[in-house]
Amino acid sequence: MMVIVMTNAPPRLSGRLKVWLLEVRAGVFVGSYSARTRERIWAQVEAWIGDGDAVMVWDAPTDQGFDFATVGTNRRMPVDFDGLKLVSFFPRSAAVPQTAARPPPPGRDGRNRPGRTEEPGSGTESR
Image 1 (cartoon, rainbow, N blue to C red):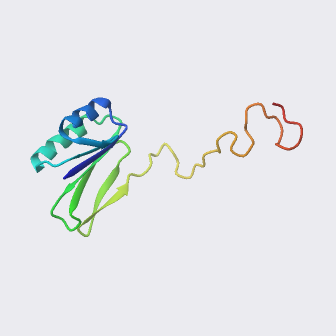
Image 2: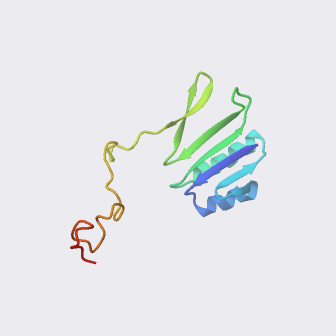
Image 3: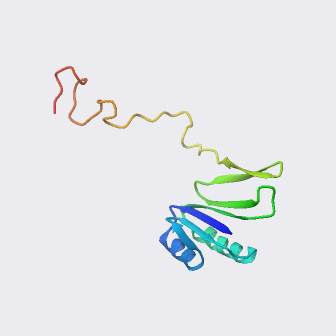
């Protein structure tokens, strides 16, 4: 058994996987193939994923009973920890500081709405 989950994948890749696997939900493909066929399918995913990302999980004779691989721009990284495969996140890019706070979206607290000039409830709002 193997499962491939893709996000932001190009339609041509989804179409290609539909030839070999059953799409049980958008971006989730399931099938049962030999290791050789599984590796060939995964090679196509790696070649065509573009800006998307994907993970493939398959049965394996490990303590966990499965193994997995990832590919793509926003991917998690498999890490071996005492014979168990765990998931680690790639660090954020240096271009975006980790401590940068995002401003609240407009209108969330009644402020920053287009057309408002004063604090809400002061009676001097313009609409």
